[in-house]
Length: 65
Image (cartoon, rainbow, N blue to C red; front, side, top):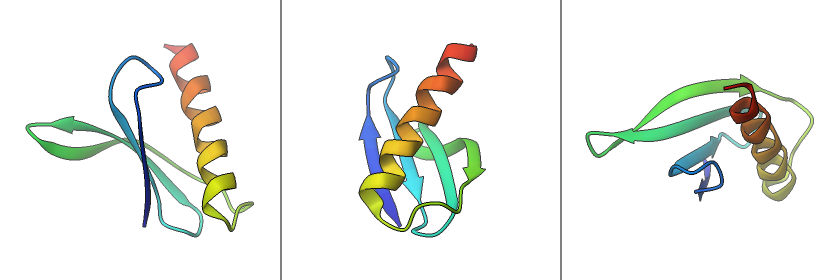
């Protein structure tokens, strides 16, 4: 698993990537990380590119709300 923690959306978010295709956006509830959005993408096989893509998805998701 790969993790990136960010405050880019105004709240503390963790991005989890399984190193293959599954991404989870997580927030803390009661001190535990909890998934609130997940998606798959099969295009990336290195962590840097995968996390850059996930940040783009996160920003797009936040724009919708």
